[in-house]
Image 1: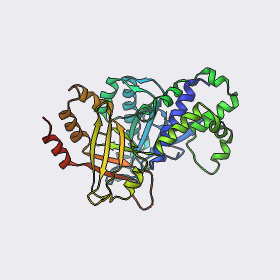
Image 2: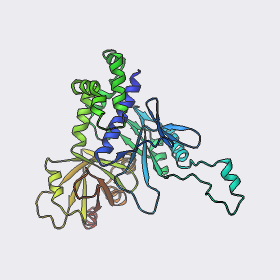
Image 3: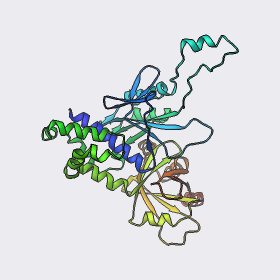
Image 4: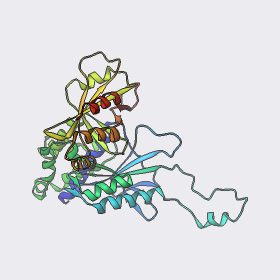
Length: 357
């Protein structure tokens, strides 16, 4: 095994766990259109079957359309190039346009009284494609993704630098310290999309290793600590933001609110302008404290702001244009939807604009 294989499997594991934490569920193989072979999870397309690194169903579907699924291509690189994102667009086309048409069905079209439809009787899905990585995306990659609605995700957006550095230190020397059989078990554990009753037994040696390991074990522990105190948000452009609790009681304060009519006020730190603070308000909430969550501004939005030298008035416009509505996926809670919506507080935003010079 090469270090890149282990880093790739670890990235897949973390992305899958991130989405699972917010109510997404792993797609089950049907044996035909989606199937497993030699440890890979494959989905059929027009030209060939593709290795689906992370393939999941969202916690809720939109009516009057084919049910959606998200497929993340995971590349454990320091920087993602335009070529990789272009390939993701090709993948989306390939699997969404895939259809089985046989010669027999074509012949039947000549008969206006044909008994059968010339299409396969199966469930169809609308697949959204994302690219996940450890580090950064090039500017052309970000621009292309925005224009083609490819979702981008980087561990760097919510993990601290120490955790990111540990991922880069997974090298051959580290692998040499693990016997070959255990390497294979760790790799299989990280790639394993099943979470059935046999899961713990099947991966017992790998789990025991990770629990005491100071490299990938510490990476996973750091990751768990972050996602257990955070939400994932989706802004109207399709960009993901990761909302980390700014105070220990943010979740408790949020649970006390009426989830109808939530409003947001968004501020930024002058010394760290790429980190913004989301404060959630509810008109009926009487506590003097409000739940607060920090998040990194998507890089392409930051680039727009930098073009105007981080002008305060431009920041107000960006908040209005890109953060007018945020869909926040939360951990599944009893008797509550798996997501809630926060709208920008327009009265507050207009007041801030009026007081700007």
